[in-house]
Image 1 (cartoon, rainbow, N blue to C red):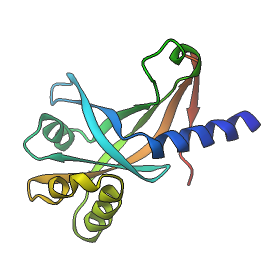
Image 2 (image 1 turned 180 degrees about the vertical axis):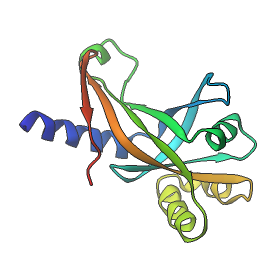
Image 3 (image 1 turned 45 degrees about the horizontal axis):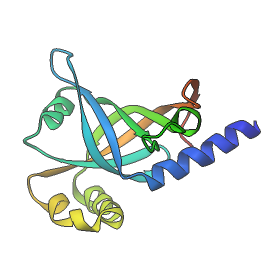
Image 4 (image 1 turned 90 degrees about the horizontal axis):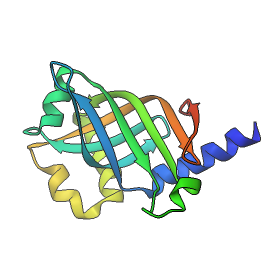
Length: 150
């Protein structure tokens, strides 16, 4: 029980402190596609990211809203094999509109003030990720499934 509490604290800290994640989607025929996105946290069960509507990831998400978002705290050093934490958020993407989009933009630019022009552009879509579960890896090989907090 104490180990799970510690893991949740580490996961929450990593989600708040990291700026980039690897987004994985699938194209209409099921081929995988991954790329980097900047992300912000609404709460442990909901994340945000932005992309322009002319991207492959946008087209993929319009076709299939399921996704994986990998966040990690590696430093690209040998110590990562013993100390790094990685979490894959599995869930679905919902494009925000109206008041929800404005609230999401406020949260997003709170973390990324230098991306305000990008996220407010008419060509930009803001997605909320509704996380179903996290697959968390510690010490390079310990895998634990974690439900987002309510």
